[in-house]
Length: 321
Image 1 (tube, rainbow, N blue to C red):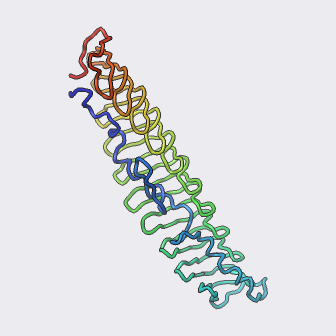
Image 2 (cartoon, rainbow, N blue to C red):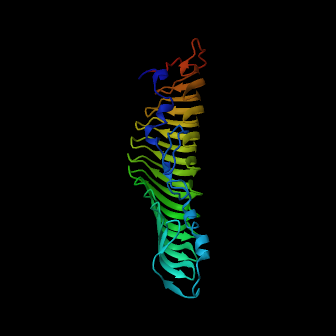
């Protein structure tokens, strides 16, 4: 066995590549996370020009109100109506209001086809953005509301609950490369309990906050590594247990993906190190227990034994075999 000071117990052992690229927003990316977080929740339905799709339905209201009204109690189908701004509506009318089933297309290529109630998208319908994104599902007051499926640029699909154009409640979001999130959303972000699956088979199951793994959660890597414990902003943070594929186990405190505070590292053959850690390495007072049960107490400085450190134990057992 190599000396403990050379064993890779630093943060890279825990901050695995399998946790990189956690998708959080499919309409915007973020580069301010240690996990290179990017991609993810569909968020508010917008066009390519970042105009809320709800605003499309209001563009012709003034013109509609100025139309000569026929019998407002009779639902009827009329020839396609061309608006001054270039939009076209083909469907049912109730007086001078779009009502019933109909399709409207706008000059930039955006369209809505489905149910209308008094000039509003209400009920079931399909909206296609000018950039090719499309939503098919339930609507209320010109907004995605209820159950629906959103496809984003052939990259991301979200299927689940919506409230006022934002994901709300349970939903499943998948990415073309194979990543998948199943769980709760709030105001368009992953929030609550959820599972995240990486394309390589790694997975996380636990709590989320503002699109990040935060709270209690379990991580299982495709390489056999397992972590159970606390998280903050998609980093290991707080008390937890980390088990490597070869059975090496750490139980203790973490700070931002690194061992920090008091913790115990245990080998399958019975060896054990108990002591303090700083930024992923031994730092401060610690105890090493050999396979035979002998214990040595030593002080460490940034992963190295202190030169001339006093041996406080009754057994002079080296820290390496």
